[in-house]
Amino acid sequence: MNTAASPTVPSDLRAIFEAQQAHRLRMAQTGAAERQAILRRLRGAIHRHRVRLAEALAADLGKSRAEAEITELHSVVGELNHAVAHLPRWMRPRRVATPATLLGSRSRVVPEARGVTLILSPWNYPVNLSLAPLIASLAAGNTVMLKPSEKAPATAQALRTMLAEVFEPRLVAVIGGGADVAQALTGLPFDHIFFTGSGEIGRRVMEAAARNLTPVTLELGGKSPALVGRSADLGLAAERIGWGKFLNAGQTCVAPDYVLVPEGQHDEFVERLRAVVTRRYGPHPGTLTDFGRMVDAASVDRLQRLTDASVRAGARVVFGGQFDAGQRFISPTLVTGVTPEMPLMREELFGPVLPILPYRDLPDALALVRRLDTPLALYVFTRDPAQAEEVRRETRSGALVVNGTVVHLTNPNLPFGGTGPSGMGSYHGEYGFRAFSHERAVLQEAALSPTHLSFPPYGRPAPRFTAWLLRQMERTLPSG
Image (cartoon, rainbow, N blue to C red; front, top):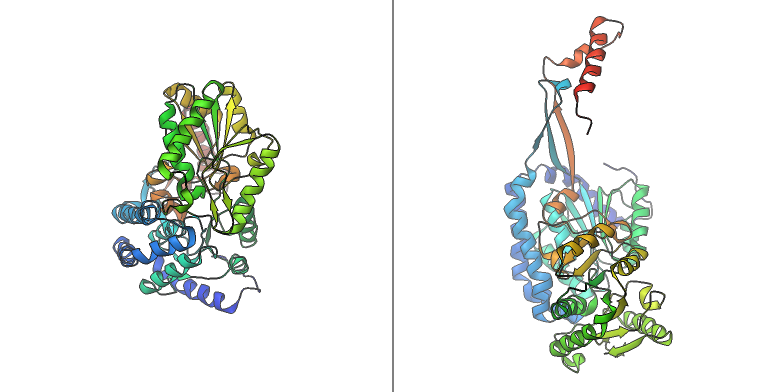
């Protein structure tokens, strides 16, 4: 357990933290049945507060009820059900092999709770990305301080009300406030910090955690590419890229950030994508409840600046292009004539603006992907399994999806996480349980153990024989 703590932490936050510290051992000693009961309480609360949560998502992000159900509420309930069903197996100690040099001894790995954990959740999926790590942490036997984003205030309040109904603050406490509160929290000696957000803030969280040697899971982002191969079904690619990109008004950490299309198929793909977006959202998406809003006016202004600067450099807006900061609205926007040096390609867009770039051949496309920071996801559309495998071998990303976008998040048997600038660590399903667990090595040495042959003084025959025997064993072991 870490012991250092920042003297600048407000007394009310420290009091909650200390209450959870006092409760951590009790929680860590719970069995599978008790933890399953805790998760079922949470599931019941979600069902009772489902409408209020959906209304809060509509207020904060303009999410329709259907989109809130599909991308937030159903996902969380699915994660809960998966954890409840599999928790006894996850908690079970694992027997591992013991070498001949410890003949008669037994070895196992026991997953144990880390202790007091901090979850710093973002605004773009404020229910899903708050409750999914909460489920993992509770399943692992921890206490949790949850700090939702202040940029989704209605959802933060709805979560606070719901969780206070079923959990005492010594088990789960929802903390309100802005960046100053988050900074103060990261000064406390938590046993694990789980952060979802931008790379810039993630670095600050990691720096603060390092002062207490607190381990972190960082779920960040990056420019996730969609690479359309020459053999791809262009209609399928347009349908699925259009869905993944404009879901939640483009504010998804794994949304396709840009598209790479073969030169000879570029125009056809653009027309197919334009038709898909028109069919789904009509000529006036700003009047629809099916298309969400940006989180704030500043996000609209940022994307408009990037788009305008790229247009001045030679890019063309071929569809959409409406920006209304007052309404927090950006229409689904397609931009062609984009080059890697333009502003739209210099940072993660996190909105409904999609640059489409032509490429000569696959090595040309892969070179561009590798030139940018390692993304959270990479999408490749192809009918050729060998080409999909080549893309996997020649690139790095948190995840690779073939002929789809975003859907990998819905499989609880897959780890979700980044690598390099897109994050560290992973979660979902058992991977989340392990992220919030310490795997403790336990070895029970036999009463009659070969180790006594190694005791000093080393001039005795027994240690000398042991040294000789170990050398002989080295010669018989496979060298790989």
